[in-house]
Length: 426
Image (cartoon, rainbow, N blue to C red):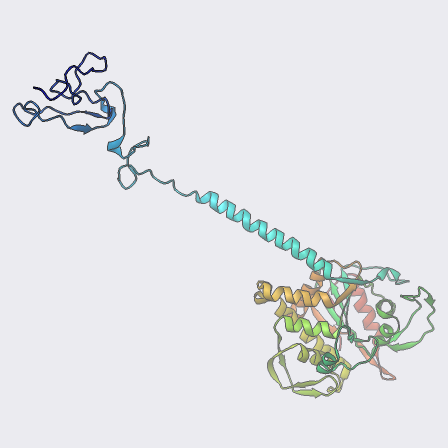
């Protein structure tokens, strides 16, 4: 008796089904797994199933035309089971898709755009930060009877003995004393022009006439009486505007901008830049300024730098020798600030700018561009690209230094015409 049930339906297809009780000796066509198709039949008499080995599945590329009639291509033999495009990668490994080469031109472009944006934003931000720190406190429009402006730009640069913001310890450390009010320890005219820049030191003991002027606070007009005094007394009497009025009256030179810095601000700038390298020609001491220097090259900190530029009691020609030291030190300071180690180092640049801008008092029309022009002109002059001199002196009167009127007139004419200066000072 046959153990297999007879007469099972063949799904109404009219053909016997192999493996489900069908009496057919041959397996059905590969329709369940459409990607499989029958291989070559085995020779008769070998194996079971009626003397034949069942056909083995063959995994082939459907591109050769599958014989099951469904046109199905599994892609098994290419490794792209889930619909990949097939083919071989650059290393010849089947089934790998080549990665696109990086677009270096595009990367460089966007890197450049990013860097440029950062630079612009930083520059603009720095400009507004620095501009907001300038103390525009001097109104030159209140100065009366001013001479006509000539060619080029004239800056009056003043170092005052202001002790603003200094503690008792600071005053003791810097040997400034505790005098009330403000006086000028140094005064310079810087002319910036197309035919060379000129820096002229004005000794504080210069003999000048105090002219008619308008009070900076009262607005009242004070008539001149021909009174002569030291130049620094003009500042002590009514501040920056009277000093500008006095310089213009006694020289005939129009002052375009005013810049002032006090004791503490000067020392802070030097410390912020990390000290200033300076070669001192001969040793000297001054108990009043705290100076105590040996000859030779050395690095001065803020305290030492202030003592160096203030010292006058150690010299025979006190005020004239001091102005020369001031010019020498400003040259070294400008060089130190403009070095790449400062300009390209934000940890030095910003503290230096902050210390300088916090302590500067300027006129209301001063812009950052004007200030930068002044700084680089000073650097150039003291570096040998311009003229550095004292105001020409002809003698003294009552302890005051008298200017050589003929030389001063020639000097002013050359500056107003923006000509190369030929006058020599002391």
